[in-house]
Amino acid sequence: MARKPNYGQNRADVNRAKQARKEAKLEALKEAVARRKAGEEPQDAEADTSEDSRTKGEHHGQ
Image (cartoon, rainbow, N blue to C red; front, side, top):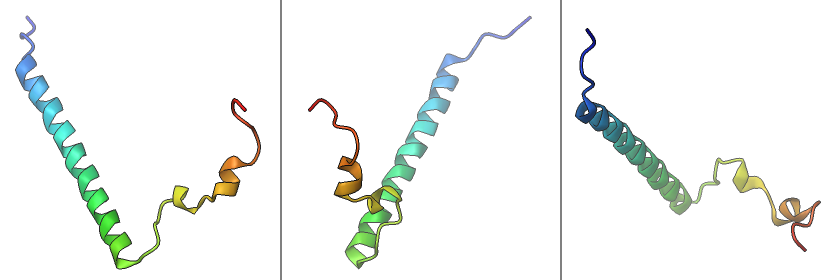
């Protein structure tokens, strides 16, 4: 016979994982702020795109 599911434990596991993701994201954000304050260049590929490359091509709704 199968055991009854323990929904409280499942919910606690989900909440722990969610909190860990939030903390990791916050830590990455703090590191990015520290790098900017130190004068380093951003490492994201998106940061390298310029205004011209985003506006070239299709005109959306205009």
